[in-house]
Image 1: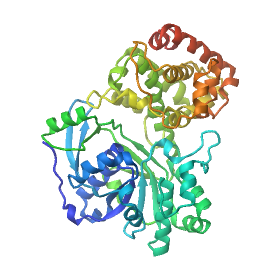
Image 2: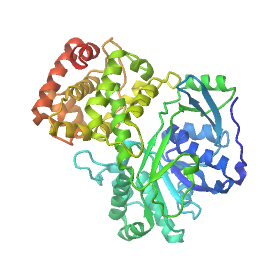
Image 3: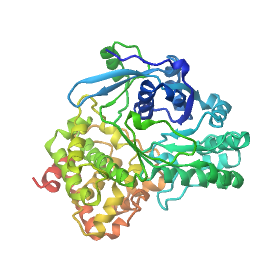
Image 4: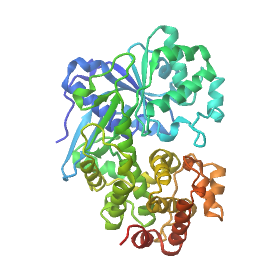
Amino acid sequence: MTRQISYDRNSLKCGILHIGVGNFHRAHEAWFTDRLIASDPTQCDWAICGVMLLDSDRPLYDALKGQDNLYTLTECGRDGNDSAGYIGSLRELIWAPADKDRALDRMADRDIRIISMTITEGGYNIRKDNGEFDLDNPAVKADLVNPGNPSTVFGYVAEGLRRRRDNGAGKVTVLTCDNLQHNGDTARKAFTTFIKAQDPKLSEWVEENVTFPNSMVDRITPATTPQIAARLNERNATDDAAPVFCEDFIQWVIEDNFAAGRPQWENAGVEFTDDVTAYENMKLSLLNASHTMLSYPAFLSGYRKVDEAIHDPCVRRLVEQYMDIDTTPYVPAPGSIDLTLYKKTLVERFGNASVSDQVARLCSDGLSKFPVYVMPNLAKMIADGKDQTRTAYLLAAYRRYLLTPVDDNGESYDITEPWLTEADRRRIESADPLDFLDLPAFGAVRLRDARKFADCYLEMVDLISEKGAMATLRENVIGE
């Protein structure tokens, strides 16, 4: 039985404007907000106005608009029992390319007190070589001199805040929900750098009136293919043009630093804290880094579903060794969390056959993931002289994945690396494998000069080329 909406959606008022209405947002922030409104009618002024900025968003926009922004969310249980229900917290939806002023005016609306976003890890335009916001990005440069007609998220938010200042709408919180360590600090750097370059007076107003809390988000939410959508609709007896499915696990930890009030999300399961650092480090170092560790070796070995890959004893052992030996020494447990139980739960989540996440999704945009998930702890491991075999194997597998888009079984595949530059391509295609280590994504440490790591990496490059990813994993990495 698919749960129906238990509250009057006509009574809702949007207090949140969210940029980037993808599957994760609809399974995470919108889920928490829906759950809160359903349990407490006094929270009905915290509904969500979604804003879509990309031309590619149009199909989802049309699908949602055709059903009054309602959609179904199926939570896939690790025990095989699934639960489905309608989500009603997304009350309004704007496709900005066709309605730019409306999107900007909504950001400036007094009722909107939180501007949240999911724009991907790579969407903050932070240079990988020096960690600074890239003011030379052509789209950014165009928005800097054309504030009234933005195309980037930075231009939109700047113009929305400018209008907000000019109409006296008051303070607002910018809340990022992307998988970045210190994601609020990253958002602050990106938006304040852009705004200062465009409008120094607005920059002064932002300094006094906008907060950027850090947060840690967690819920595995795969892409919904047409085949999966059809299966969900059949299972749930629905006719949803935009269904979402996800795992049954969910977590959201937020620094309680809101400029203009916030929903009482704690009553829906959100944890508020003064400092999310330890939570971020735990999640990024264990869940996200382990996803990356699994991704390229599993994909090259022919696996396309995460649950099938983790049930391979070799892949599972790789992930468990990486978490236990390489990562745990650098992950202090936050609060009362039991890391042993947390890691056990992660492996169970990876193996959730009802979710059946795609390995290709984990492989996508590696250039944005390595600097955030893998490199911080690798730098510490190198400095401490730890065994680096597993991470050297991972980088060798990543190089093979990018260099030769054919897996060990002869199956060709497409690569999704939206931030790949011509300079990156030259490093990937170089006859000297060490040049690959100069990718800006690995800039936390000069890997070619870390001789222990570099020697192990070169050995893994040769072994993968000679024997394949799985044989190398089994015979030379996990010690079997």
